Length: 202
Image (cartoon, rainbow, N blue to C red):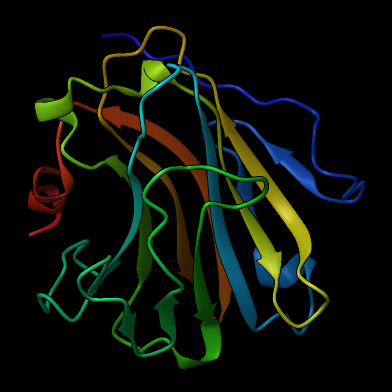
């Protein structure tokens, strides 16, 4: 059940972007003065030929008690794609193609004041039924882009699965630090679906 996390140096020519390792924290708005609108992009490739993997990105908006106070409003996923200051762009059901497979837009200035943290989770849809795990997926990553600066890549966190049996990953979080926002790479794998991960925060 072990899962190993790491990073590589391939950042699509964004030479100034940071490659984060597990538990690294970026002082996001301090390091990027004026940063207000960001995009959380996620991507992956399928290692098992002939299979489609429907990976889904979701965001949980947490209060100061580390809880989701409003369901479904504070759970952004394919059945509830938009909230105040946050929007899921779409649902890619195959992982085909280059670049980000799914993206979430966040306007940090519009996030409600009672929201202290935004958790980003990637799950495999119907993983148990299809007997699919993150060990069958390659080149998984999340990255943060500056939406108001030609989508410049600010940072990236790459996942190495190495035979993992997990079906979901708590990938990263954005959290308030006074008037600033920080971004933390987490990489915590779970054998659970989206509801199982959500149950940790209610």
